[in-house]
Image (cartoon, rainbow, N blue to C red; front, side):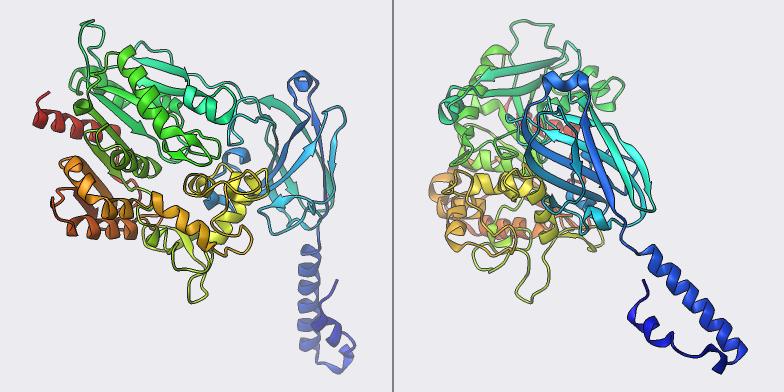
Length: 528
């Protein structure tokens, strides 16, 4: 199909032009015609069937995910970080499917999608194609054990075509590496089970000190580690893999004799953030009254707050600091690296209390939510939320299992529909001022400022925060605000150590070994 400009000049009599002009015109016309042909819509029909071997494992109700990824290096279902939005095109839809008949998708008009195109106008190119049937109702994210998916097909689309995808794989249960120093904790929480009206099983993994088996009467200080966003208790597999530097150091005898507990980052709407909330339930109470006493009694922890520490980076940085502030007498030190926004006046460049919109700033420019180390924006807030809207079974971010789903579930009240009330509209970004007021109780800067007379004496010698001043998620302004507030307080004057490193990015210096050495130094100071 020719464009309007070509249609206008075609009637020109070519013989009125010079030979050179005729040749040039014909070349230009040919190139434009080929270009227009290449840009013609390409229709793709997808047929998805279920392998007979999985028929007995399939649930009739679920959410179908269809991925077309331009990144051919990784499975599309594992490219769920929003930075990949422009390369990994996701379509999702809730549906009833018995698995007996194939699903035929001719258009994605009824799907939520991150892509800007429908399946009847997909750009030509090579894609990694995959389907996933999200049927799990226990976990908040699509990588849950029991979900079904297809193997990856690499397909070159250069014209109308049909694609057949067979779902023949199932995500297996999570397991820990087989090592005498690694222990899996599995505990039914009475508090959370009562809140949710069903059994809630809490998981954690333990790394036992190298000398743990040498003296059956020895007790140990305990480190509680909180992962970056959504990190599971199984991350110990990565840290303690055979041959790793950390494993070699841990078993060498040079590492401090500390019991390491890796908390699980799973909650009803994404990461639980280990705190009580209207939507998640009493996670903070569960941690301090159920899990910690159980672990320390069962695995020879000191059972003394003097020897109990908490740490983490990113989400773990926020949670660890929040736990120290909300439970100042339960922990004797926090090592917080690159924490999520600890002042909501600087919520990744958004002022929750004053801004009108989460997607656009006061000048009408899109809010960036991530940048590279030079400051160049990588993804904007509206695109980030569009991605989470696709992951959410409600077709909104409020139950996507993603970062903003988890923030919203923790900080917001429960909505009339039973889901967390959204801080901002998932389509327009308009901020709800009433919900913003509810967020204040989780603003760590306000918590310190408004409760210093009570908190101050309990926090002396206990706060360490590190932040890169080129944090990739714009978290340094909130930490700067927190620093300004806490250093201005008196009676007592805070001795919190807050370090800002120029030109450093998100979690650049964090490591298990670094934190354990900080804990070792703290133990020397208090007398181990």
